[in-house]
Length: 417
Image (cartoon, rainbow, N blue to C red):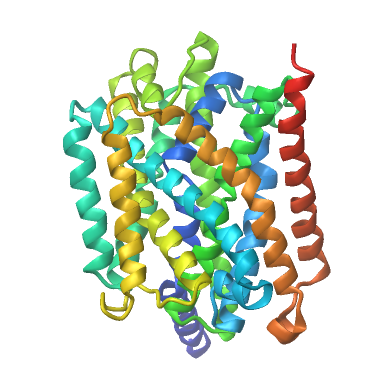
């Protein structure tokens, strides 16, 4: 009896610690399923059916390994990735890396406001109302809130993304066909398919998340003695990410692909589902897009503000007041205003922005990964917590594959008929 009570206390103590640590991994993973990601998964499902679902398996493995390295580096050094790159690579190299990432951040945030606009149009709300209202809400949440309050709201948003499971089931998918497609994909190799594969990898493992994950681990004050709990948080976040991505591709692959319906954005998928899977499936899909867009419209400019400020030595953090981190808040505010204004321009090229921002992520990712792999293997920085052999094999393997994929994307147009 005493042993049982002690066992229960031990379990609840561990559960309590896990719930306290819970956040960075799940939030970072969930933001991957943003408006740009949902658009990319929807277009992939509509164009290739279940043919590209297999990309989620290597993406999941890569996601877990990379986030583990980010968390470990943040906890051991107490510094953000951008800060470490600046200290070890110098200002000149840092400048060129972060100029590219900065514009990628604006493109990604613009995509989130496109998601807000598109999802609300399904419910009959014009973008001239939805975008400014959401822009003010996300600005207020970060600038006037605290990290604890923001994190709790972000976790609620993460759970809301599971609405895509409902939307996919309403499409009545063929599970045997899905299993067969994962084992034997059979897709044509050309510029379009390679662009889509790079976009899928770019949205599942995005450059910004390396910086955000490391910064939030530091802001939360996590220590190595609780690293196992941090890993559990990361794994749960990665599982949620892949599950949501999987069901979005299933929803579109089981309904739009057989009908030969071509879509350009996630809003098109929501509208196309209406006659095929019913009005409720359409609304559930649109609601998921809206929640994901608000969530990511908050996080992506925040991540960009974090890594730019860290790279150039400015103070950064939600728990700091405006006067303590003026550059951080001005940058965050500026990115939101610019991105929202782009969406409000009549006939703005939203579809190219959505797809190509993900492709740019895929091309920039090797640069970020190379920097990270060099830093995490330096004993001077990590002490006894440098990478093990398996992490290095996966990390360097990912860099090589992504570089080859990017080169293929450049070369293939010369061979396409």
